[in-house]
Image (cartoon, rainbow, N blue to C red; front, top):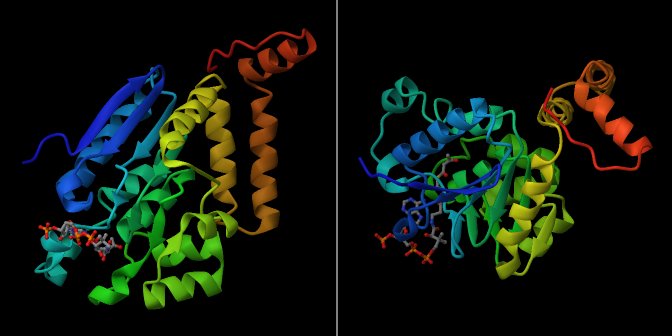
Length: 258
Ligand code: CAA
């Protein structure tokens, strides 16, 4: 078992997770994804953790699932291990904010992992793609579904059917990433944004995240109803009282996450 495939740094209440297999372009091996899922599981219940930044290195966020590990797996191997679902999906059910800070390649499962985060900040050298078709398979960690929701049918189809990569500027233009930075500014900016979120109310952030995510699941009418119920319930929190009182009293709010 290889240790430290996911490195962790503490920055106040932000946890920076770094995918750490530089020799393999950060290919996402089963052990690596297990370590990532465990980290996220621990952060879920740790009140000292307010937000997470997930990153790779300057060459690769991640070049996808580990092809060398996968190549000889049988149908029964992947079915019985519940490959992808059992570990990868943990980040998509995480209730606290998580930012993907992407430099270099985000391909296949790497692109899918970034899309499981709440939003993507990218370096100018970032390259996104779903090249699975070129190795005889299809995206299997949500790529055909999430990419289509992010960038629309035409671009998603082109990327999934041809394996074409998208550079950072195009990814920003079509809404896959929220902002692009020179590479040296990517991590400081991601940490700054995450830090800002840790100063907000944690349960209200969860409600906001749950509500936006809901928009991808249900009709507009159902989504609005869901939002309205959460909006109303925010009035039952101490943090809503504090936030609005602070605004009226022209001071900075102190949220208690209650
Ligand atoms: N799995 C395993 N090893 C990988 C890998 C991957 N996904 N991507 C790169 N590597 C390894 C290479 O095999 C190579 O190892 P060796 O030095 O032992 O030969 C090392 O990382 C460096 O890679 P390259 O020499 O290929 O570097 P490059 O700069 O020439 O190319 C690249 C970089 C374009 C990212 C290229 O490595 C590449 O195309 N990688 C595969 C991308 C891919 O097909 N991803 C989809 C995987 S399937 C998937 O993700 C399924 C899913 O949806 C869950």
